[in-house]
Image 1: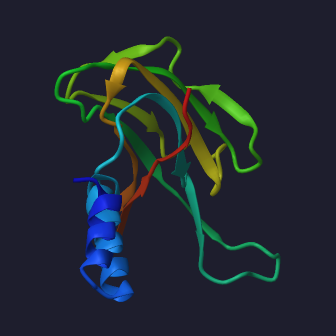
Image 2 (image 1 turned 180 degrees about the vertical axis):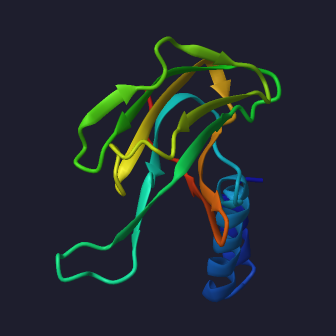
Length: 176
């Protein structure tokens, strides 16, 4: 029996409008459960994913010169194919600086990432061209709809006395 018929039958039986509204709300939520569940994303044939990169972190107090302390970080960008059956192809990995200027495409040729495989890109600690607002725009595609890859950046610096490590996650900004 369809949802409208169930609601009409409830109204004919004398159910209150509140009960019908509650039934409708539950039906809508139950029908959309896969979409509402955390971590369940609709398969797609490709995306461009924005990944924040913090190749340097400003900290401390602002000095009389107007500057703060800066710590350079290395960054490991990980493109993880989460599909168990199908490969994805990473088409480009454009690296932009804080001002939005393209510094380079870190992937000279498209790379195929097998099911459950990972493609890694690395920004060296000594490289400070990106700045605190750097980012990657990673474009990937697939021949069939696949589970969306997990794209993260692990920022780190390890030295005597202190260590810093954190992750930033990519966010889809467009689909083909």
